[in-house]
Amino acid sequence: MSWQHKGEIHIGILIAALVAAIVGALFTYTSIVASNRDTSIFEEIAKPVQEIKKILNTEPITKGLLMFRGNSTRSYYGTGPLPTNPKVLFTYPQKAMCMDSTVHHITHKWCGSGWTGQPVVWENPQTQKTEIIFGAYDGAVHFVDADTGLDVRPKFQTGDIIKGSVSMDPDGYPLIYFGSRDNNIRVVALDRDVPTEIWHINADHDKGLWNNDWDGNPIIERDIMYEGGENGYFYIVKINRSYDADGKVTVAPKFLFTMPSYNETLLKNIGDNNVSIENSPAKFGDRVYFANSGGRILGLDVSHVLDGVAPIVFDYWTGDDTDASVVVDTEGMLYVASEDERTNTASVEQKKINGQLMKLNPNNPTNPLVWSITVPAEHGMGGGIWATPAIDDKYVYVVTNPGDLIIVDKNTGEVVNKKYFGGPLWSSPNLIDGQLVITTCTGHVIAYNISDIKNLSEIWNIQIPSTSCIESTPAIYKGNMYFGSRDGFFYKVGDKK
Ligand SMILES: [Ca+2]
Ligand SMILES: [Ca+2]
Ligand SMILES: [Ca+2]
Image (cartoon, rainbow, N blue to C red):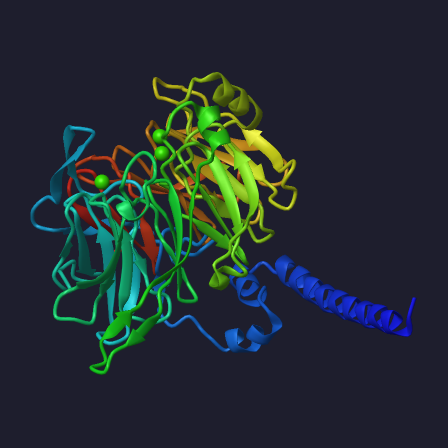
């Protein structure tokens, strides 16, 4: 071996040692941070070193509950204190919000708001007003003054009903992002005379399978949008937000990454082509997770997505339609709720393994199932779960289509409480200040003290006058609750001042 080769080896070893040291340091750093309970801090710091300082100086500018389940891990429930003697403080609007919608040649009249339907609540720094923003079954996005229940600005009409939740730009840009059944997901600017579309993706952008709606709530993080469509495709888009010479907000979006969420294995397993993405993606650190109606859960590593790559790092099959959002805890564990619809052999066999509620450890990709619980048909209702679970330090709180609240120990998978309300329960539970808020399909909003998890004590229980289904997840902000019902109207519930 010549001297030159030896030199190369020495330099190679040196470089390898350096890389190992850097990786080791980073690993230790991220491990420390990963054990930190504040997920947002974890997300901020699990980044290349050169970005850390820059990022730590950046505070979220927009105040409020800005997206479905409040954050990218889908685990933030707003703020209290909850009311002690809640009343309906306003009903919006004057006339029921309704629209006819046709799918596969069948037309239904839809009213109010539904699944997932959780509103945005944000504090507008310019007007000093708290504003509620939600899409409804009249196909419009509405902008409502949280104090008065009156329109803050004209509604934005789309061509079909809106089921999903709106995302408000978290970085102070006057932009909202939302999907509609009219096949478009839109970016709408709020700094014009009327709310104005400045960009959209049509579901025909890619020839996928199944359908063309957009129910999922997009994640907007560091100028990047993450969103799945009912065409079965997942999209990662650099938004490129800016302002023009007149000071109006602009976007110049660029597709970074697009992929179908299905593959031949999945289609063979399910034996049909319902592989739409209807759930809202979740993001933890450099990983984004989403599921489709075929039950495939994917995790992508998006650390190099600006270079157009996002490799699959997690791939799990639940056996059935998974529309509830994946919820991620502070350790990166996944809580997944699925439906129970398919009767083909492969799906039935898989559901025997993982049931309809499961904890998955994505760091163990070959054997991720930690525990599972079955949610079979009961009380004359089909089995499974549509609502997104809520989590706290110790427990998972999930409500089911058959109509039960089930509370599960996060570590052991033991069911510590089960309570029947009557199904379907599609509205996600909320946790605020040690209280659990459940909304039902008979128009009830109920708060429980959960300090003794085996003996929940009811604090209050109110019912909207129409007794109509509350299918949308309420937004809770400064103790007030904002939600739509299937009766056509939108409600604010709280203590009278
Ligand atoms: Ca459609
Ligand atoms: Ca579905
Ligand atoms: Ca389904």
